[in-house]
Image (cartoon, rainbow, N blue to C red; front, side, top):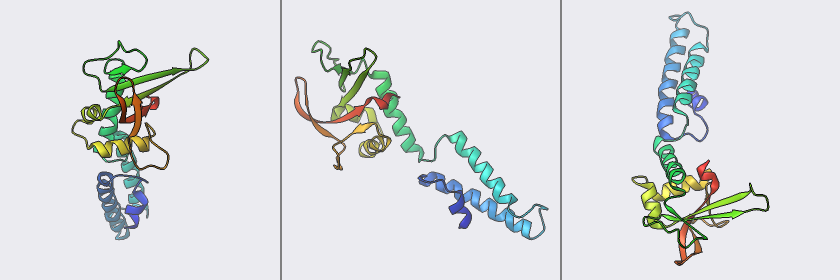
Length: 181
C-alpha cells in the first residue's frame, strides 16, 4: 500500500492506478526477495527500478489520465483545429454560412494588426457531432477543466446563453482560442 501511494501520480485516472498497482506489486516482491537474500540487491533497488519503469511507461503514454479522457480532449482539439474555417460560420459575414455548420467563429481584432481573439460558439447539435462516441457532458467538463471552455463564473453549467447572428439567443458551448493550441 505504501508503494502504491508513493508511485501514484497526482490526478491520475483509474487506468493508471491499475498499472501502478502492478508496478507496486513488483516493487514489493523485489524488496521481499532482497530481504530474503535472493537478489543480491540493496534495500530500495526494486522500488527504484519499479519507479523508473513506471516513469518510462508514463512518458511513453504521454499522460496520467484515463485514455478515454485524453482521447475526448484530442478529438475536440483536432475537430476545432481542422474545421475552424470550414464548419464555423463567420460571425460578421452573413454570406459565410456553411451548409453543415457546427457553430460560429468570431474574431475580434485588437489595435495591433497581429492581435486577434478568436471565440468559437458551438451549437448543441455541433457539440454532439464533435464528441462522437465520447460522453458529451464529461467531454465538456474536461474542456472546461483544460481552460478551453468559457462558462459563467460560479455556474456549474457548461453552456452559456448567447445571442447568435440570425438565430437569436441559444445555449452554446463557448470555446476560446486555446482549444486550437
